[in-house]
Amino acid sequence: MNKKSCLFLAIVAMAAVLALSACGASKNNNAANSPSPTASGSASAGAPAAGGATKEITVDAKSFEFTPADIQLHVGDTVKLTLHNSNGNHGLEIPDLNVNLKNGESTTFTVDKAGTYDFNCSIQCGSGHDNMTGKITVS
Ligand SMILES: [Cu+2]
Picture 1 (cartoon, rainbow, N blue to C red):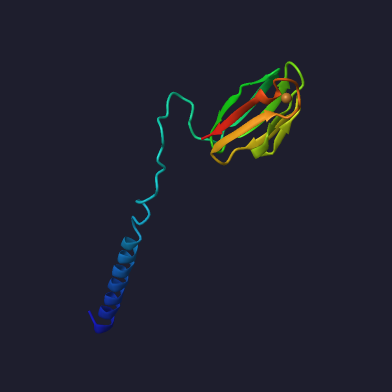
Picture 2 (picture 1 turned 90 degrees about the vertical axis):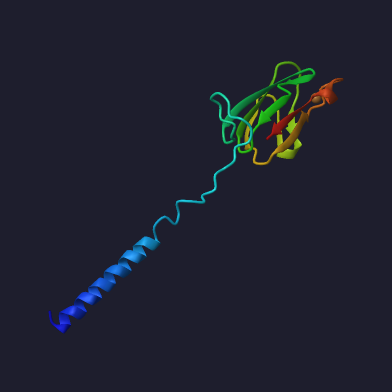
């Protein structure tokens, strides 16, 4: 073996070592430490507890109450809300969500903040008008 080919082999060997170490360094860097969401509460039978669902809810109004008067939602849910008057003339107003429905009307909105949103009758309908209230709880 002459001097020239010996030098050549040395360079090739060095390049191979560099290539191997570069390869080794980039391995396994992104496998660990990905954040895992912490579930709160216990997930039970089928229905997922997470938000994001689209729900159609019809609130029935009669003199003098709303049914349902207590609506439970999750953050991220989209709601198509309809008012149906089965007795008397009533409106459904949710001041914090900028919603005001008359009989037969619908609106669609997404709840993106947890909290309690009160609703009430928006039409002066008689002696029980002030009692026509309800609430939407978003958790
Ligand atoms: Cu009323």
